[in-house]
Image (cartoon, rainbow, N blue to C red; front, side, top):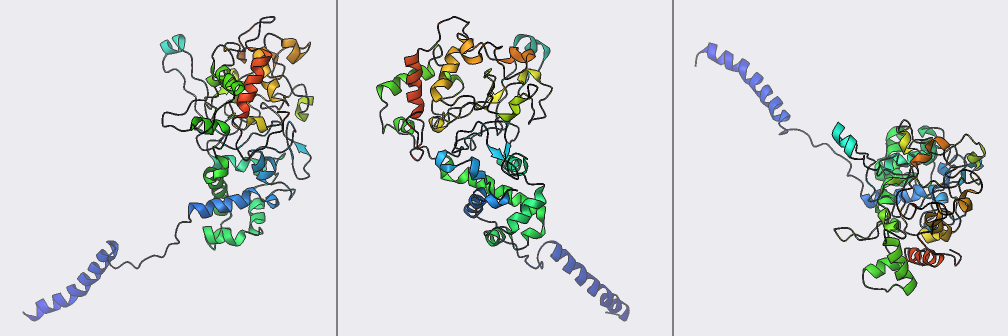
Amino acid sequence: MNSSSRNRLTFIWPVAAALATVLLAACGQHAAPVATAPAPSPADVAQLGRQIFFDPSLSASGKMACATCHDPQHAYAPANGLAAQLGGAKLDQPGTRAVPSLRYALNRTPRWFKEFQANELERITETDSVPTGGLTRDGRFNTLHEQALAPLTAANEMANIGNTAIIAKLRQANYASEFRRVFGDKVFDQPELAFNKMLEALERFQLDDASFHPYTSKFDQYLQGKAQLSAAEQRGLLLFADPNKGNCAACHIASPGADGSAPLFTDYTFANLGLPRNPNITANADPKFYDLGLCGPDRKDQANMTKYCGMFKTPTLRNVASRQVFMHNGVFTDLADAVRFYATRESDRKHWYGKGRPYNDMPAAMRDNVDVIDAPMNRKTGDKPALSEAEVQDIVQFLRTLTDADVKVSDSR
């Protein structure tokens, strides 16, 4: 090899070696391993969510937790008989709706959707589908992650002013060190990350904890062949399902799913029942105030869909007999009255609305939105109701079989 060739190799070799090093590194051959924190276990995240759910220090008052309105001993519903709960910085701000139970209301709820007919011919010959799904009574949240934010910042609930205030409180909680262990030592250095992790923990707790879906009612035992319904309960079930009598199962589905899953007694759709106005809701003192469910005031995206005004989501009837108020506005304080209303709303309007106009919890111009087609609400004034008083009581007896074993029900309901 001549000197000229040796000089070229002397130059080329270091360059080639350097290039090879770069290529190998790019292929991961020489890359140093990057240490990453292991993903937290769902059980750890859910356990944190439990602590957050029961922590009153995260509210502006320091006295209100999620569990204040969603008491596990009452099927994650209120422990009292208020039509709407009190919240705010001084716990003196009333809500505008009855607080629903969270039990069975979360895991299988579909995202909110509404299907419209696709072409002009279908729009002439077919009707649009009924709005379905979403969380809360107006379906405005599609995930628990989204829904959890609402009570934390609502002025008449936990009343925090912004996410920063919530994280400042979370940083001082007695489980803050556990929060760091699960989500990383530096999690509080990024307030938005910490906030999202808090919502994730609340979501995980409500989805995973067995207390939200125990399936321990007498009716569950009946479906499994481990219990028998009494004669009255059996009659009540038949009336509940009969399309010409109670017709309750049209919306509160009572049959197991195709996969054998236990029924949740809801089809997640929305309905306008034309309820009487409840004077025990403070906002109703203003004659111009109306809670119109799907089209506002809390939900904004359907405000122009006036045919939806007055529609609220069909709730699960599991543990309904443990409630002290019924319907979205808490207007009834007796379960039998709630059943009677369905049966006699049209045949005995005076009983429900007095001498005033019917459907008085919505503007008169929207009366046509009220369901008057489906039994048992398809009667006219003076007609014989679809259900006798004895049949009302039988349905109540059946509804009591939907109460889980850990929930107590007073004899008066």
